[in-house]
Image (cartoon, chains in turn brown, purple):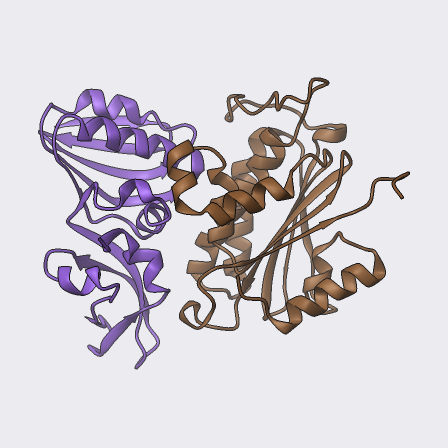
Length: 209
Length: 159
């Protein structure tokens, strides 16, 4: 997983300022950040389509729009169906029918933001559950192809990771998860590292030493 | 010929050959396609697949597994988005016959980019070595290059 100097800078800034959240950490100052808040689970398709269309409309290649579709679809689906936990710590929406309409209120609200500064395209998806386990995700990504095919689970985030150049998970446990996928739009894909870098930042839970 | 619409994709079946077009996602009922196809060897034309998510990929894996139990499965003109995702999974390495696939190419001479059809039998030796064949640019005729890392398209052909 190659790491560029600018990735280290963003990491240091996040740690020094104790501010984990926000795609602004990766995008140059002044770039316009666009945001969509899903009001119903069935708006996922519309959000993905709109995002992919908008990305191409600002001048990025169609190929990038195609990658954005996959990334946004998987991250939003993860926030809608995998993040929610019940009192028994069960992911009770994981097997829910995904075409079904479900109004999103309170902790179920999912926000999608994106921005580009002509260096990076950043896509950020936030949920209000804070239940993603970054270590489990890292292990799954590190195990690569074999696990994706043998268990048929966890393919969504692995797919999103495979489509980007930097994959960032920001977590405040039981409060919020934010996943940021960054695509380096400066270089040809053949000039970039084969694998994306993976970063995770966990905010301390209030009361922890 | 029979037509089938499951979820957000259409299928046209003629004998043991099916042509798929559209999105493969949570709405797809690909198991129905396995029922509709006759037993024995089958060919799936996947040129028209425009989007596949992880749930759609699981459905695709199950379809291929089900068809493989009945005979040889040949995939034809596999779309760019589908071949890239198939390359992420060890499931498909050496276990499915791919006759041709689309890959993103770019022309170093005129800058044109296009999804070109790669004939697997014709370029088998190069593909096994993770080398994409140079294909002529439809705009200027110069040799086009693969627009992405070879692993994204060609891992599936490496033994």
